[in-house]
Structure formats: C-alpha cells, structure tokens
Image 1 (tube, helix red, strand yellow):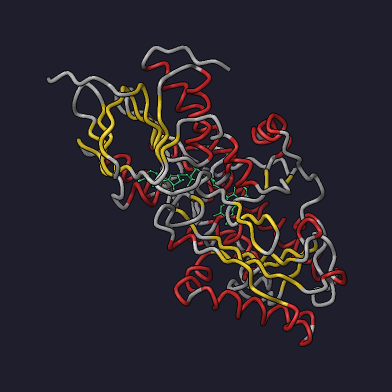
Image 2 (cartoon, helix red, strand yellow):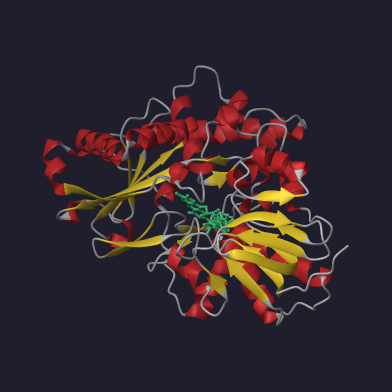
Length: 417
Ligand SMILES: Cc1cc2nc3c(=O)[nH]c(=O)nc-3n(C[C@H](O)[C@H](O)[C@H](O)COP(=O)(O)OP(=O)(O)OC[C@H]3O[C@@H](n4cnc5c(N)ncnc54)[C@H](O)[C@@H]3O)c2cc1C
C-alpha cells in the first residue's frame, strides 16, 4: 500500500453547528485541521439574514431545552445577549378567530394524543405516529400540522419511537442577533475554507483523501457533517462505498419547514410575541408569530407536504397564502400593511435539501448506525446523529463534539475541554 503524507490531521466537512463545534474542539486540542464548507457563509441551516433592518433567522431560531443547551454557553462566551421571554406556542394564541375554550379543547386533544403515543411506545411497537390520533377528532388536521412544524413531516411518516426519544425541557430562548449569527461565532478563530465542496472521500489508502471542488486534501481522519439527504443521494461519495451509511441516511430523511417574514406597517396593535392561526381545520396551514422581539414583523411557519407544494409554486405562493390567511383573521385593511421581506426554500437548497431529520417508521436506530465511525478514520456528526436532540442545532453541536473527541482519540491526540 502506498504511503501518502497527511496534509492535516483532520478534515471536517461542513461548517454548520456540528462542523464548527467539531472544529472548535480540534482547535482546543491543537490538532491540525481544516473545515471545508460548500457555501460562502458559515452556519449551514443556522442562517441569520439582515432584512428590512432586522436580523432574521431563516433556519433555526430557538435554543430549545435552553437551560441545558450548549449554545447558552457559546452566547455567554461571545457576549451575545439571549432573550428568555415565553415562547409564543407556550401562551394562548390570538383569540379573535380562535376563542380560548376552543384553544383549550385543541390543547387537550394534543395532550390525549401524546398520552396514547407514549403508551404505544411502552408497548414497544414502532408505528406511524398517526396511529395514535383519535379517529374523527376535529383537531386531527391541526395536530398533524403541528407535526409538520415540529418534525417537518406529517404524523403518517413519523416513527413513534424516534419522536418519543426526543428530549425537551420546555425552556426556549432566542438570540436577538440571530441564532445563525451565534452559531457562526464558533468559526471566528477556525481555519474554514468556504466555497469548497467535498465530492469524494477515498478511505482505501493509509491516509484518507478528501476530493473537493478546490483540489484534494490528505488527512488522518475525516468528520462528515452533511445533512442526511446529501449523503443518501450520493452528493458526497465514498470509496470504498459505505452502503450502511447511505441506507441509514435514507432512513433519516430531512422533513421540510420553511419561514416567510412579512414586514408590518404600524404593528403596535398586534401583541409582542403573539401567535395567530388562520385556518384550523386541516393539515395544510401555517402558524404566525406576531412581532418577534417586538419588531414590526410576522414570522410565518410552514411545514411538510404543504411547504413542499409552496416551494414548487415559488416564493410568491408562500406570501399569497399567508397574506390571505392574515387578512381573513385581521380584516381586509390589513393587506396593505404587509410586505414580504424574505422566504426560505430549504428543500431546494442544494446544500441542505430539507430542514431537519426524522426517522422512518421502524428505523429510529439508524441514528446510531449513521453516527458510528468507519475504521476509526471516517467519523459522522450532524443533528441526525443525535439520539435525543436530533433535528436541533444543539443536537448537531453535541454530535460534532463527540465526533471530534473520537477522531482525536483515534489519532492519539488528547482532547481538551
Ligand atoms: C426553518 C428551520 C427552523 C429550525 N428551527 C430550529 C430551532 O428553532 N431550534 C433548533 O435547535 N434547530 C432548528 N432547526 C434545525 C437546525 O437548524 C439544524 O438541526 C442544525 O442547524 C443542523 O446543523 P448541522 O451542522 O447538523 O447541519 P448543517 O447546518 O446543514 O451543516 C452542514 C453544512 O455542510 C455544508 N455542506 C453541504 N454539502 C457539502 C459538501 N459537499 N461539502 C462541504 N460542505 C457541504 C452545508 O452547506 C452546511 O453548512 C431549524 C431548521 C430549519 C431549516
């Protein structure tokens, strides 16, 4: 076997939360490494955009399980202020078109659904979460819509076991500067090569050779943090092939969640951090966060097949739908006060192809399969590798740190906390 000198100890592929957390751990350990990133920015699915004079998060926005979230420490170290006010979904929604007794009835239906689901998990059978809807319940459409917001997919495509494994303490904070901007601070002192896409990992020789759009890099180990859809569709190839990884990634597809931000003229009549629903009798709906941080904005949230359909129709379709629903709830005069600012289409994003991962029914163990190292040389991280924090930025961060520690151990460099 030919001996090839390594250019660096470790190549990290992807500069999202996982890749940057891995990079930061390698930096602390004094390993030689490079993070390569296909985009021309850091943060991946964490992306803060400046629009209309506001920092808006097109991807992740909330530090979930906030009191136990590593990004709270990242924020403290970076001097980034966090907002701890109650999340809109933890307060009653706009009552003019959704009276409180109706909201209570909806919440009770959710709680009863979750109760049945937990009992189903205790019976050890993995089934589509939709099996636990009460047949004929009038809130089923809206509960299913809730699943598209939380999981990016309808309940019929969701593994009950996986859903139940997710841990949420119920505490949610935000960064007024943007969660994407907070994630990007992790990259401040790291060697990150942007505009550089990995195309092939050749792990047949004594060193691992990462082929990229800017040439090849030889390394002792590599950490792959790509979104699962890009591993499953062969955007990044492996030689020799890694069929177990391709299969695991395919069993952890990214569902879809999209955001549309509308600017509101004279927003003072709307509650700060309020929540509004338009239609509530079907799955194809959106949810509306009024005046996030008190700003004159509405953040509209779409998920699942409905978001996919709107993505195909184009950005204007998101705005047409949302404005129609808001006008229905707030009155015809409201239309002229709304201006579309920015809209995501994560399903069409070539470096994501979706929003966050869920497990297919019966396939929740694919997370462990994906996370397992190959020959102590090819390591995997990213939100989909997390057993309890998947689909989140903090899950990605933790998976990145775990992969970095394992890679350092494999090449015998002691990690530093
Ligand atoms: C609309 C939306 C709302 C969300 N809301 C929340 C929330 O409120 N709270 C929360 O915690 N999470 C939320 N999430 C999820 C969270 O953003 C992700 O789970 C997390 O950011 C994923 O981090 P990652 O490092 O695993 O992947 P990514 O951030 O996707 O990082 C992977 C990186 O790899 C790069 N890449 C891709 N292909 C290549 C290649 N061939 N070569 C090199 N680089 C490549 C990508 O550009 C990307 O930068 C949300 C996501 C979306 C889309």
